[in-house]
Structures are given as structure tokens and as C-alpha cells.
Length: 325
Image 1 (spheres, helix red, strand yellow):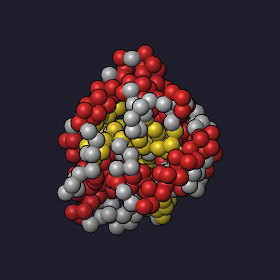
Image 2 (tube, one colour):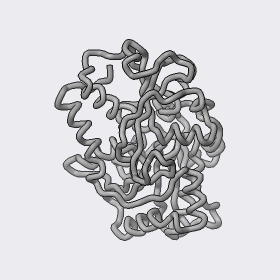
Image 3 (cartoon, rainbow, N blue to C red):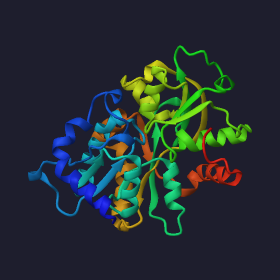
């Protein structure tokens, strides 16, 4: 494990109790985007006197199936898993996407709710560091009762843009380069349309889908490709600026962000964790948590489910069109 990750994790363990109020609740527009947050915490579901025996399972999240505003849902899920597994579960939050990815690489966290694009990049190394464990199936009809999601191209509600072609020369904001919905899918979309010479007038990085939504709503950017799960959740819960934008076009469906586990995790623990997640909808409390997250259930998925993401990545490398423009 790198000294950088060890230091961050130690800091989060010491400061978690003090930082907890700043991590849960509130609108995303009132907090800095995920990639820019410096505060970090480890949320520990049980008070010390109720702590379960054994080493903790550390779970990291990067706004996978709910937005940053829904971190409380992840905390409830971690608490529920601790009781189901009879083992301590700690939710690591508040770090940038890049730091979370490094923590997963180094084994500082054993479970991650992450985007499918970094999952593919990690799994396809000569020595894979993660395996896919399960994936959520969302409740909304647009997902067709399948573990898929979309990349939604949004513009301001009152903007003049009515179709994608109207955006030529406009300002595009994206969340980050290792995002499937925010970068990999739009890049593939441009390649397939032959728009590799520079379609947008300006392309800027925001650091998170929530910040991209805010920038479009405020007029700082004209458009953004955002994760449909984040947009749906924020609209349903009336968080942030999601109600001030409209969807101009949707890409997908695509394989939904998965739950991944470290390849270092013991096989027995992996099986018990998979069983708990994929049977969560059958438990009364588990069902309530899933409903809050707008999820129907978790179901097992195979690595091949993410081949579409691989193909988009390969297309970008093959054509040399690596940067949105």
C-alpha cells in the first residue's frame, strides 16, 4: 500500500466522527464536487460498544447508483451489511474519484461502488485488482428491469438547443476522464458520427456529475453528458440543480456501475457478501434501503456484461481520438 493512501486512510479514521455531519445530507450544490473535496471520513455504522469482532470491511463509494447527495443511503447499506455479515463494515467517503481508485488498487478498501469504466481498466490489467460482484437494477421503467443505465445529454431548461447538432461550437462540461457516462460514451458517440475534428467550442472539466449539472443550470456551460442514475436520483429527491435542466439526447443503454471487490478478498467472504446483496430485496429493512436508492434489487453479473465499455475504450485508442473536443 502506498504511503499516500496509508496517510489518507489514517487521517480519515482519526477525523471521521468530526467530518460526518459535513458528508451526509444537504444539497450537492452546497458542497464542492467529489473530485475537489479535501475532507474525508470513514463512517462506522455501529457505536464502539456494539462493534462487531474481526477486521473491518472497508467500502468506498464514488456516486455510483445515487448522487453525492445520497451518501446517507450508502451509510445505511453499510450498516445493514454489517449486521448481515456479522462483521464490521466501514464506509470510506469524501475522497476524490482518483484517490478511491488508488485505494482499491492498493487494497486499502475491499469493496467499491464504482463506475464501469474504471472497473474495466482495473480488471483488464495483466494482474487484475478487482472482480465484479453484483450490479443494481433500477426501478424506473426506462431501465427495463435490467442492470443498465444511460448517459443523458443535458442542457439548461430554457436553452435554445433542441437537437445535438445545435451544440456545435458550444461549451461542454464533463465530470472526469475515467467516467463512462461522462467521457467514454460521449467520446465514442462523436467518433461514430465522424466528429473528431473539434465539434465543441470549449470543453471543461468539473470533477463530478453534480457540478456539471450545476454549471449547465447556471449557464456556465451549455451542455454535459451525465450519469442518468445521478440525474434521476437528484430529480426524485429535489437535490441540487437537476430540476433546472432537460435531457436533449440519451446514449445507451450501457452496463450499469457495478459493485466490485478486491481480488485479495477471501472467497468465503466474497460469497457471503454476494449473497447478502443479491437477496437484499427479500429483507424488510433491506427493501426500505433499496427503495430509498430507487433500486429494485441487486443481481449477479458477469465480466462480459461490461464488454460494451471495453469496445468504446478500444475504439478511442484505435482511432487516436482520446480527448473530447
